[in-house]
Image (tube, rainbow, N blue to C red):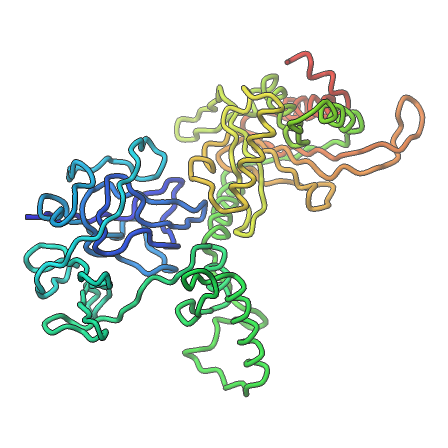
Length: 475
């Protein structure tokens, strides 16, 4: 007899307490293998495929696409054991213990088994936990139509329904709404619809097999806007009026924005920070980069050169590559430099981390920055790629600003900010000249060092920017 196990939303790290279901990767009745991804979720940090630690047949799913679940809430139930394999070959060893893995890429080595449907068992009244009273998963009819939809009754229990050829509910089964998955692949399309209050279930996709495209959502939003302009505006009622305050509208602090708010508030509360800055002549650094790139591919990015300068400076001033343990009243100086860099995306500000940056040359740093930036743009960064930083490089010059006083990325001890590089009058070799000038700023935790150390670090960085040959001493 099959044993039904419940798989709950795992802890995704970094203190995250909830995740939004973006896309289900399995249906009720699918055969799944150990560590096979079953759902794609979006946290305040990244998009994550969540693998199931059990092998068997999916008997129920919890949560609709677009809804948020707290960590520890049920995701799916899986029937494991001999009875779960009826009509299908075994997907794996069927061990109820599972792999123990909670995230894709965390030690998983086996390729996920191919998903299969199981044939229907005789009609049996559905139980509240998404399986039949006989303990068997409800399968799919021979004609290939979906035989089971997970829904919620008034008490919150899962109900199942069987549908005959005409679409009517079969006798003996509780009624349920046939709510199939919305044919949308792109999370950006889902986000666009969600942010504009558009129900994707009401759209007919123009893509292959009815796939809903971004153009379909944009067309629906334009049509709704035209209808809104031409229709009379009803009076707002307390039930439908948006949450407003006098002179403004309330916007929930959730997702990336909420995570950033919590992180920065904690930094300001716990870290006594100070900032120092200096202007530097970056003309020679720009010439050195141009010479490197003229020598052939791959190209070296300016961010990679600045990162290489940072790692060299941290080798001289290791106090700034540290963290503070107030419980033990200790400063922990870290051996490796895991360099975070601020990246602005459609989801908000994220800080991908280049692991072991101190062991990479400019070419390797360029490649890793490019890879992580693309992953940030597409929303595919993993939690591992967004955590573990020891020092942050913030190039806010891309926004066209000269200076800033960055907030330290807790629990790190410092952040280097880089403004835009612009032509300015500058005294060079005793004469006034137009040079490429950049403002550098260092915000540091005053508990780990005093101004002399911070100033020495910043001055070394400025010297390397003005005279890249200084780096040869540490290469």
